[in-house]
Length: 535
Figure 1 (tube, one colour):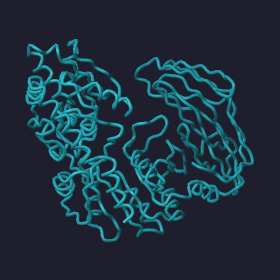
Figure 2 (tube, rainbow, N blue to C red):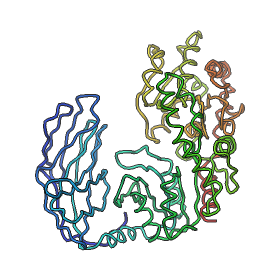
Figure 3 (cartoon, rainbow, N blue to C red):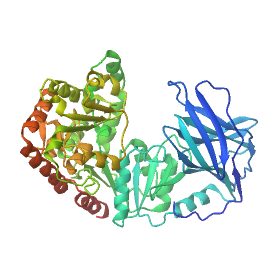
């Protein structure tokens, strides 16, 4: 946040008295170097999910009606280590309140009447080193409402609210990163925004700064308070849900215009993801058990698609998704809408003319969390190509993570020209790797757009994919290859064709980059979104 106008009357700092109880799942040590507390954590049992490190002394707190506390933890971590601050209020040694605070986040703490002491713990998971600059509990001689007002004032310029279910933070960089990228682009185009991350499990207002974007966090009550106090011109929602709409309806600003981006799962019938239920009976049983919850969600979507009580307009990322999924699965007709694709950063994913030899270098960057991404079809394509006399001239680089990673890739692990990388990549590294490859292998079973595919096209890679769902709105035979549904052999034939036709590779590569600039570039998409936001 930019400024915070209140001065604490006391700051309790937690420095060197950290106690690690008996634990055979992790090893732990700590030391202080200058102004930093250095914590080394190693998970020694793979099945362990997390553990706690306690501060050795419970500190007395002054609980009065006009006293409010703010808990803060600031620092950096390495490798897979995640560190969060846990603050509990104690009455007669028993916990009466518990708040969880993420790294580089501050959160208001209102201890219940009768609270005598505060207990502080660190919740740690993964392995690595943490360099903690500050763990503190600051006391303000001010009621909660006054402290919240000071937090709201810290970004007074914000005229619009981006409302979302999750948002990136220091230890969770990949949570709706595309929403953050939008917020950054809005700011670059002189549109000042707050972000509110709604989590109904949170019972206090939190705030942090992520790459120059001001972020508020909290539950429904905190969202309603923000809406009542800040008077935004428009609310911009990603991954809309009932909790969001209930908080808006409980506020004094029900008629504030709302833009809702529809991304996928929030409006789909359960059977859209049939491919996740085919492996075993337990997955099907789980799906069938979720039908009631799915119906509740799609009934809710129908209610807001057809609502006349709220001032809502919907943004769909593709025509196919609006008509074949959103309307079809909710049995609704959406009148007030626009089709605006997800933005592709054509400046980061810039086009450099490809050498024809790069047609032999094939890249795949896909999650392995669901069969939606059809990585098994990539494996079938590689196995088919392995019978070709030129197979060893090809090079495959496969990046990703997820529960299905090892199982799906096992059949191709023995190939020396198939390089498997069990991790995700920051966007900057993806752009660099794009420069080294010529083809992007990205089969699919369900996509509202296929953003990673579009980013690769912007860099001049030729997409090798399936002509299903929304994909034909972004790829045609002039810039890529569209195999039939479930057709791994067709993917292999596309790669085979380009191997034998280097001139076609050069032509289609340039066409792919040009198409993304005409269809999904920053200037084009952000201009469309800004027109909707400021209308």
